[in-house]
Image (cartoon, rainbow, N blue to C red; front, side, top):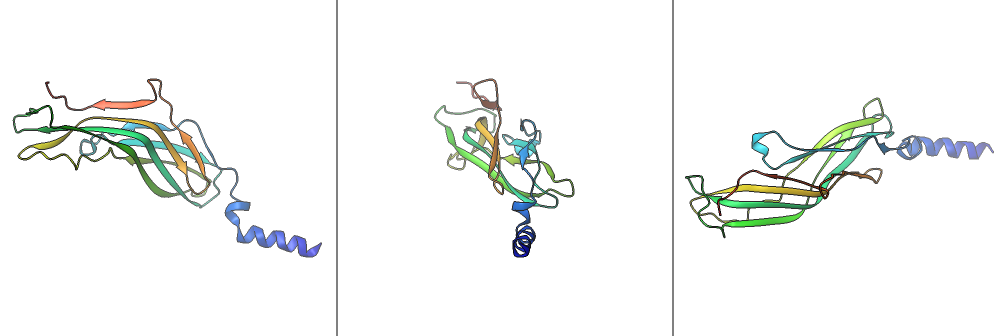
Length: 169
C-alpha cells in the first residue's frame, strides 16, 4: 500500500502538466478582425481566451485559416491597373504559431496575427504589386500543447473578406 501511494506522489511530481494541469478549455468565442495597422494590410488578428491550463505553464498555439485567397494587382505610378491580366489570386492555408505563458491564474488571453498569402509570384516591371482583396475561411485557433481547437463562426458563408483596391475593368 505504501509503495502505491509513493508511486502516485512520484507521478504527480514528474508529470505536473498531466496530473495538475486542470481541464483546458476555450472560454467564449474566438474573435477575428482585420488589423487596423496600415503596414499590415490584409492581416487578421485571431484572439481567444483559454482557461484551465494550469499556473505558469507555457502553451503553444497555432491560429490558422484553412482557406485564404489574396488577389494582387499591378498598379502604375498613376494609381491605375494597366492591364486586367496583371492580376493573380494566391490561395492556400495560412497560419501563425507562438507560445504564451498562463501566469498565476491558469488562463491565457492572447492574439496571433495571420498574414494573407504572399503575392511574391506576381511580376510588375515598373509598377507596384498591390493587395486588391483578401478573404479567409475556416479560421480557428489550436492549443497544440493540449490538442484542443476552437473554430470561428461567421454568418456570411463563414468567410471574412475585404477589398482594398479595385481596378477599373
